[in-house]
Length: 93
Length: 195
Image (cartoon, rainbow over all chains, first blue to last red; front, side, top):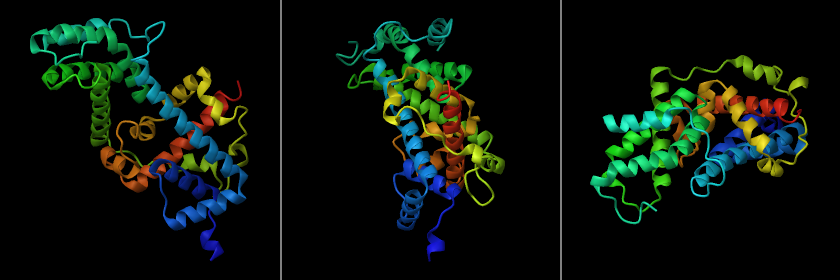
């Protein structure tokens, strides 16, 4: 029974990602992961950092949208000529 | 704002020109973030404006122009991912990548054990260097993997539905995501935390 519940670190990190990205695990998966994380500081650290990365990605995505509304200072960089190419494409259409 | 009332077709071109000035840079930045390719990003911004021109009459002004344009862009990026996978289905990622992190018994390899990060993860977001490095590390991932990491920000969909969008099996999806995150985390640790 215990053996069935024991995950390797490889499996535990995989379940960590699954949990972070789908929001849910099976009952048994949750139990397995909780048990492993309780015993394994390395995977706990991994789980914390991985969650922080997700939060940062999410925040960056939101910040990009918000900047459109609260733009301060320099406008963001745009490749040379892109504005002109866009206007030309719009003319041609 | 431009969206006080439903814009009329006759001033469409003028409005579109203003939108190019106001929003092209922001759209480009976001496209670049999502695709890590300048060329692709520019194409997607062009397609976004062309689609905006075609669908202009359906823009009611209920949402801000930036919101409307960003929604179109997200669809374009999702289309781009789909297209890419149709033409080149996601490869089964190399088993070796995982083996760089774990022993055959599934334990962390000594050199791959996650190190403690100096900053508490809560403070990361306030650090512009971290944000920049995150973007760079995303760019270092192979394209298929990066797509899997960012795809969920394109829709409100959760993991399993994204598999369909990207035309890959759920098993493959979780494998790619797992490996991509292992590499992303390591990249951040190596390049940012040890500056």
